[in-house]
Length: 224
Image (cartoon, rainbow, N blue to C red; front, top):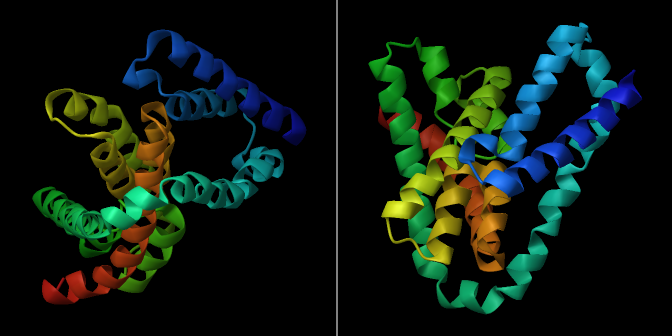
């Protein structure tokens, strides 16, 4: 069953990718639709998450090599990165501060308890960083994964609208996607070309580093 689930996940993703290439609607983004379809299949068939992950664990293990592979487009765009290094760093810093600030404002407006508020704060950092940051500042690590995914999906669904009305260049799109939507944003950046992917992967990495340092300071500053 586990192997069948693995094959089904791969097949579903390829199918969703084909559908997306035909219609190019944000709601049909392959990562989002594949997750929705697989959740529905697990609920209908009664297959447990543990059983599913026995096969899908191989997909999970490919996350590391996939992130490392992003170094290649970064290398090809090294001249651009070197030339605009300072604006990139400043943009990411502003993005990280905005991400933490928006998370705090949203949680406060909803009246969430302190533990949930602290869990939401690192939502725009890549999952391997968001989880330990949430744990360090007093949040719930397991729920941090869910909030990180929600932030990523929200960003990739709404980004085409922002890019349509705001004159972002390819570099700007990459920085925005990488900072706001981590790995999911970088996968979306592929649609805009190599330069956008490079900037997105750089922004994602910088946001992870800056966010891991800024998180505890933000909590201390606001005495949360």
